[in-house]
Amino acid sequence: MKLSFFKYTLLPALLGLTMTSCEDFLDRPAEDSYNSSTFYKNDTQCVQGVNYLYNSPWYDFQRGFIKVGEVLSGNYYWSTSPYLTLTVNSTDADLVNMSYSLWSVIGHANTVYNNIKGGEGSEAVKNQCMGEALAWKAMAYFYLVRSFGDVPIIHDNSTMLADGTYSNTSKVQKSDVYEYIIMTLEKAMECLPKSSSPGRIDYYSAEGLLAKVYLTKSGVAAVGNGQRNTDDLAKAAKYAKDVIDNSGRSLLSNYSDIFRLQNGFNEEALFSWMWTADASLWTTQNTLQSDLGMVGFSEFGDTWGGYNGPSVDLQEAFGVSPLENPDNRADVDARRKATMMLAGDFYEYFWTDRTDAKGRKGFNFLQFLYDTNGYGTGGPGQLQSMTGANNVKHLFGDAYDHRTYSIGGLSASNMRSSLPTHILRLADVYLVYAEAVIGNNGSTSDASAIDAFYKVRSRAIKSATRPSSITWSDVWKERRLELAMEGDRWYDFVRRSYYDLSGTISELKAQHRNAFFGLNELYESYYKSGVWNVNTSTMRYDSDTPAPNVSASTFTLPYPSQDVVFNGRLLEDPVHVDVRSTYSY
Image 1 (cartoon, rainbow, N blue to C red):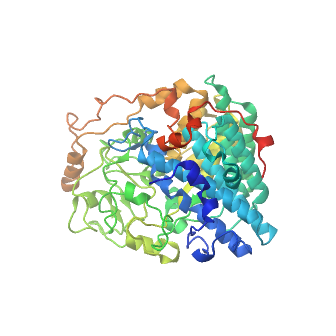
Image 2 (cartoon, helix red, strand yellow):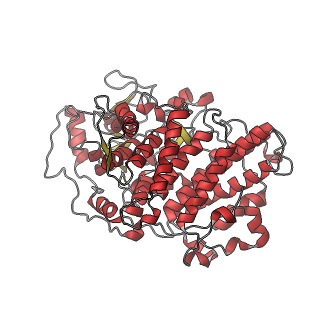
Image 3 (cartoon, helix red, strand yellow):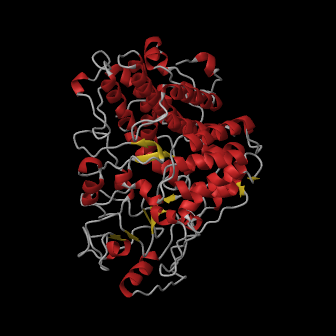
């Protein structure tokens, strides 16, 4: 049975941080020595002590990461899910796990920060580790406030244990929570170095998140009037531009490379969950391939996501259709294939030990579906996806791929991979900058904003030409295509709802979120005969299922019911807190 989020947040202080860290992400301390009285005595121990914040407390958020970020937003079809119909309630298991996971991150980050602050070691390393802890705390709060709206502020676990306020804590107005996140990131930036080891958070990682926080906060006080706070927009642009100009980071030349095992520590990733498939370490593994991969995609019998897939609406955003003949499909955007599998697709970076019917090393989507005997582990024998597409991001491939391309040649196993999950990328910061410069004007001809937008777009579309101006709509769509299936899209809708509620509701209601009928017949016939024969009477989009109801309340998820039972004050109106005078680091 799960603990309430307040107990779960305070638990690290009681346990002395007995959890282990990711063995592949630097070293981990021995379990019998990992507590505040015997640890944090030197630089190595301080680094080891913060490592696990990159994985274990986030473990239970993985499914919510997709269901909230992508299913709620209309990017992903998950059959019979309340996230698809926007009817999530307070007892939903994935919502509960998501909430507990985020509060767990905050509790552990608080405890690690205080223990390292009072520990030994060089000031430089202690500062780096404290900065990492604060950056992860800020990220967790950023997810919480955008998911649940007004939330409590848990500044120090030990203090709450001492004064007994953990079960009597009020919600804080979301505008104040955003200010608290900003304050936390400012302190993190004071502590963090300008550059660090691959995969670790540095100054520019925190600054990139700060820019995104300011862009989001800019609409909080708008109350639907369409005008965002210009000071917040200016700060979002300022911090994003500093990352772009001075971090020394750049976009990878090939979009799909971002998500490969061998590029887990790529310079484009500002924040990443760093997982390990080591079977001796629980809650440190990536399990997303199990939820998103098709039955038979791995040898471990641990993939069941084939019945779901990228939505028809997302396919249309990429300019493709499940009824489009793959022989004629003009894939001008490299992000489409790197995001979703469609009929005719072949992936040279999955199943690199296997040969398809055409003699190519790699993964043939249609052959996998219909050749159940001679190709790989034996596919499902039919198209399972109700949208004609299956997922690509967050997949590592088969066991051979994992051994070959993971750091140290570690083997995958049942529901275990080491594939990092990138949750803030440099491309996001480029688009934050472009949108912040546009601000309330609708469009801009500012050269630096256009350059930022064009760098993202031209990587994916080689034929793209540099525009002379860009609009808010251009950036809005580009964010969707660039970041699809990265757990972000719903939070863009939440951000937009702060200042454009009616437009946000209208877009969600107009989406093609439903299934598509008759696609298995179409795909199988094409695979066996090579003829693409569409029968529009049986192969059609489900236009009979009505669009989900969307209202202002849709953009705030309900608190888990157990939390409300434990602390009835969560049902009360939020309070205003002057965070700058109330809290300090």
